[in-house]
Image (cartoon, rainbow over all chains, first blue to last red; front, side, top):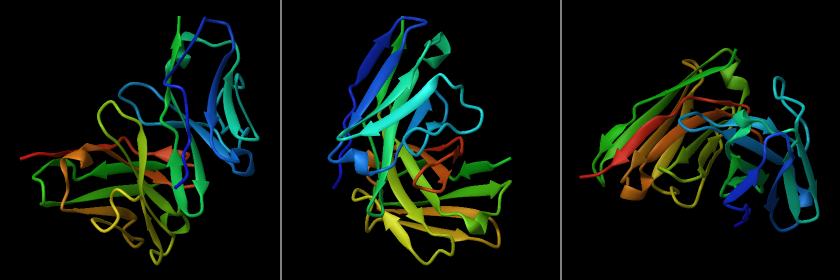
Length: 106
Length: 116
């Protein structure tokens, strides 16, 4: 099976840049997407195909993927960005999620 | 606008059975692969199952393989998940989602509690 690893938590000050990593074997060969989930809400797709933003997602959200690591970057982080973030890939007809990272804005 | 509405959750005894439904609207249901994802209390997201557009191909996560069955009724725009022999660790919010390589639309989820 394929595994994706994320740090349990990341902290950032308001207005600064947050980077959330996601690592996996030869992850750069796959398409990665990212979901944001706030307490009591369903996940929301914020980045797909490594770096593309769905309609309605602010441009402060961006993504990258190379080698064994993908990253979600949030520029000018706002208090409303505090949430859990999950990376995800589709690999050989299975879906794999990372364990999730809690982003704290303080 | 895409709308997905899950139902059928509740309390089920270990070894019993339960069927979840997901009513879809706002898109051509029969044109899309559909997926179930679950989230245990306080935990991360876990892929459960996916079904192709016609219902002829199904895929399952290792933890539910052989116990859960995904199906769909394209005439009614409904996705199903039949849970057989549920265990305590199947307790979770179950979400249906449109597609699987990237899931842009999710329902609000339905809570399943497996307990005696």
